[in-house]
Image (tube, rainbow, N blue to C red; front, side):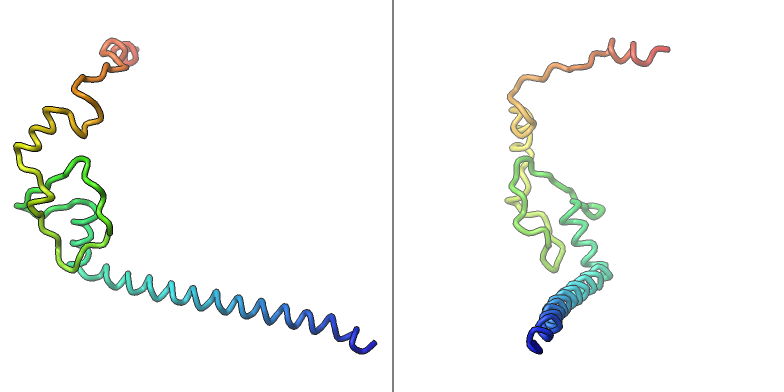
Length: 131
């Protein structure tokens, strides 16, 4: 009879210890995440890192530089650039002739050579604006 009366409290103790262990693991994981975010925040305090991220993620260029966008190019494998600011390379920037050929042929512009028919005509616009 004494063993039966101890079964409930022992079970509750074991369940609480298990829950405590799970919560401590959760706290540890969250502390690691906070440390990683603080390290990332410290990197953003560096002006060179912020400039490199703006160049890589947003395509910003410095005054005097010429920026190129390659249509149909695969996305980079990693969004994080190297430590230095990436300079344009000959393989990443098409020459004027190849770009002009792409524009003339319509490659990367969403269709063959034919221009799409507009769904809204100037008359539609004039009637919608008139009082």
